[in-house]
Amino acid sequence: MLCSLDETHQAAAPGHCSVLLDASVALLAPTAGARFLDGTFGGGGHSEALLKAADDVRVVALDRDPEAARRAEALKSQYGERFVFHAMNFGDLSELEGAPFDGVLFDFGLSSFQLDDPERGFSFRSDAPVDMRMNPESGQSAAQFLESATEEALVEAIRTYGEEKRWRRVVAAIIEARGTGNLERTQSLAALIGAAVGPAPRGRSKVHPATRSFQGIRIAVNDELGAIERALPAAFERLRAGGVLVAISFHSLEDRIVKRFCRRMAGRPEHANDSRTLDQREERARMISTRAIAPDAGEIKNNPRSRSARLRALQKL
Image (cartoon, rainbow, N blue to C red; front, top):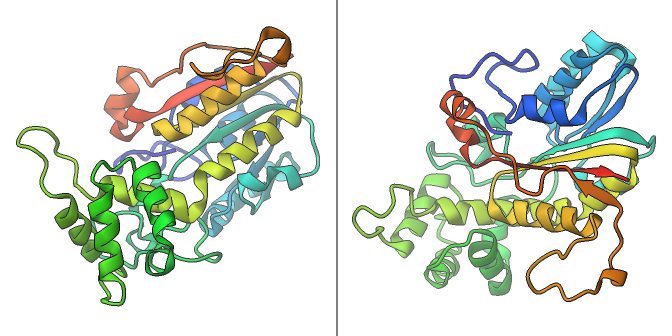
């Protein structure tokens, strides 16, 4: 979902560029009258591309971010009844009525709008409140989470979701900083985590030492992985026979969930320790590509933030 700051060619929303857009549309293969679900509207690039691809294509789009709802108004005014937007978390997809769909698309992760708005608190490039909520009108902020979460929840956020090797130091530093105000602003939090992690060995990494922890905190606050685990089976059930599900991930934790889901639907072992026999598996889909599809060199050059994107797709039998 991420796009470079200088990319402005998307008609749906200037400043946003949809990752793996051409590959996604090609896999979904819109035909006249087809109906699609865009589970992660963001800046609307994927939705708009589908609406333009063939006559009378219809798109139902979801996003929990109130700003996305405002951006969706432009497509609604242009396409009328062909485009419907629901202000909802894709993790609640099981509550959506109006299936089936010819294709479903998910573009996980942050949008450029969220990352580049300092007041959202996703980045420590600027000083801002530590919020990090996909929907800032619901739930607790990241600062509230850090001040009140159990040690177990902090460990899950920093070690499991952030994949931070020095998680013990970070968790201890966060707990010690409670009540000091250092957990309330992005730059003071980043400095606290950076001091806990310490500098990387010379020449090993240029990534800020707080990057992994910020990712883990964000994932925990928004229940991002839980939402993916709920959304994929709900989306699959809403596909027509022959319909295609496309999912774009931006880090290994997301991609692992998608990969295992695709293998499970295709009746394959989900992972190396999957000991189920053939008669215990059910083949309900065909994996369109056994390996994840990555952006090509041209897309990465135009949009460096797309570098980590991985696309997986399957077709319902």
